[in-house]
Amino acid sequence: MTVLSLSVLVALALEGCSNGSTSSTDPASGPIIMSENASVPAPLSSAELAQRLLDEGDLGEGYTRTPQRPAAHDDVSVIGCPALEKLGADAATSAGLDFSRKAKASFAYVGGSDSELSEELYSDSAAKLSKGIWQISDAMLSCPRYEVASGSTVIDIGTQKTAAPDLGDEQWSQLLTYSVGGQRSVVKQTAVRIGNVLVVVSGSPGLVDAGLEKALAKAQAAF
Image (cartoon, rainbow, N blue to C red; front, top):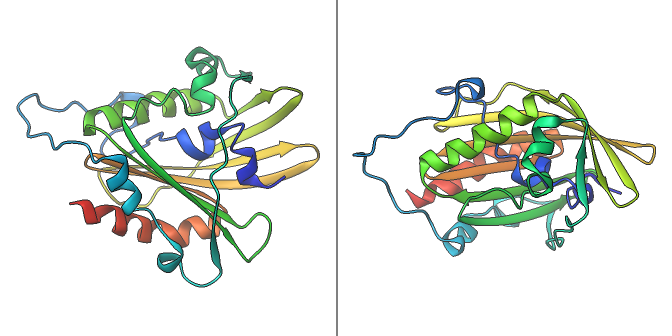
């Protein structure tokens, strides 16, 4: 079972974890506060976001796009993390992320079975994105290790905060270690908010580092 196939069970880590430890706002201090008088651009539509996703041409030779896997989260539960348990199973599968517009693409790289990359784009008001980032980040940072159960499968997850690149308005990065069935995989996930768009890139650490700036450049075509 590859890392990204596990994300069907724990999309909190590979899809929804729009958690933001930021240059302007630390998660422990709460979300940013937007002025009511500020000019607020309308969120981008899901169709507009889809046009700004990475494709094979952006990533270069060796990448192939993979079909989106259905989200199977009806029986998912979080064990050993009260803050995440409080958010409920929907949070553990990203269904609880209240972002109005979204698009996703996943890729495999010829480097091996664990050489996969996933990109998610979300759009909403900057304040709402920041609040969602803070809420889930705060929960995850409270639990460096926990389990996610789906049916008879139990996945041990370890989280470690890592330095995020100084890009965009808010940014956050982490390493997640998955252990299940005697297999262990490491995923890097970096989230960057640019105005009313949130970019989340997850997968093999080297591929995330190589693809992040390309993802951000294409996402900013909206502005």
